[in-house]
Image 1 (spheres, helix red, strand yellow):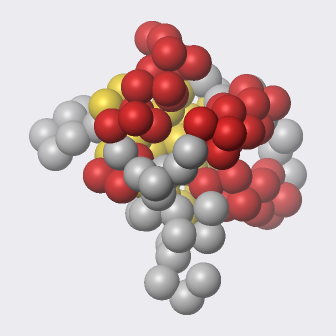
Image 2: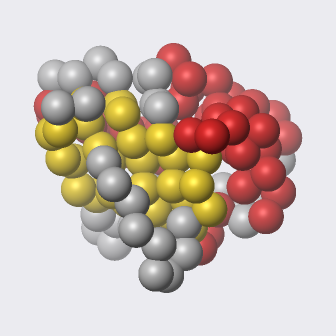
Length: 107
């Protein structure tokens, strides 16, 4: 989508993907990051996931895909929505961050 952007950063721990609002689909963006970087695992995802209207089935599929990609850190913001935030927090535990203005993330 023309209004969607993401930044892929190579770090010693793996790829960090910074997304805007994920209009193209979070998993689609992460698969593209894997393709472009040649890295099968994604260390961290930071930004909006556009899951605010996702039902439980879509959330389950999204969480499974994130686990398959070996995502360790997930720092979500604005368009994720409360319900999705809670499901992601349950799935990622200490690897989950409710990311807001003023937060500092050390990668």
